[in-house]
Length: 327
Image (cartoon, rainbow, N blue to C red; front, side, top):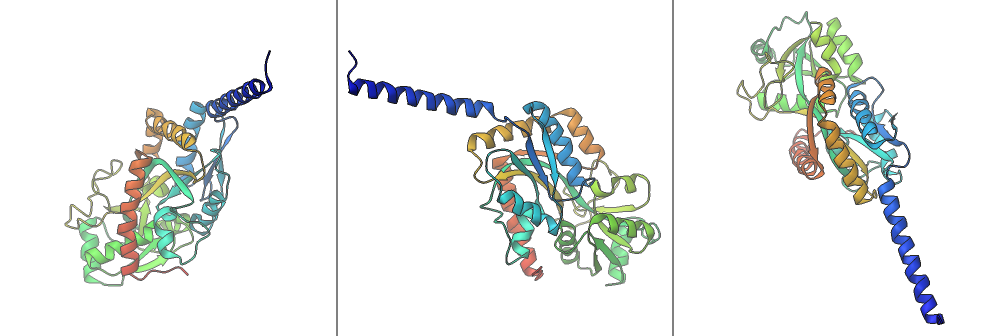
């Protein structure tokens, strides 16, 4: 005969077993629906290409659609706010670049998101060194000619960037400080119009990331002069680095990592991290990124955290020293 006490114990045990079973099913079932991949820039750009390329591979691995959601505007601040306010359920991921995670918090007094508290880092994807390029009619053929021209004529040469506060702008500030030269900064509203004016000769120079201008470089419509990287760019092996010319501290990249809302369960973060690393190791993905001007730089969440912290230390000091503010 089952007593009331034993009956309650049996019901409690059964309830606990069902709860554990349900939790296990919930964990193993992820993802059970499409994943939204937010991109803070327009479709067709370098960031969008990277997200769609890697996202397509992740989709195959997960067995669920990965849908890119472009939310451009305000240096990816609009997209950042959207992701920060999204449910942390594993179904929203975000291509966060160094603008989102590093520069914006130092450039703006107020932001609608907290780069350190609102996001959990999943892993690094790719980067591209910033390259100083010249218009075909600028009369500057190589890096040595560039340095000679800048030294001889301070403030004469204009240099375009996709906008104030962009990685390109801050690379320009770093270059000026370390090399001891002066140029006229011409900030555009995006990389595309800046590149058009460079090709047309309206500006003499441009701080370019290769994913945004790989077609123009291959076609000879712009002249690559100097790479701001530790090593030569594989796609441009004949272009020297600033380090080779004696400027060891002139190193700057535009880079992309994957993040999720901070409330996303740890096991889901780990799952996404594993799938991201697997996708980044795929030979087809790596070739597509290479052809588009990206350097595949996979790294797990721990390494991405270390890298991001080092970047914040470096660039926040430069922003403060150059007194750059956007509000």
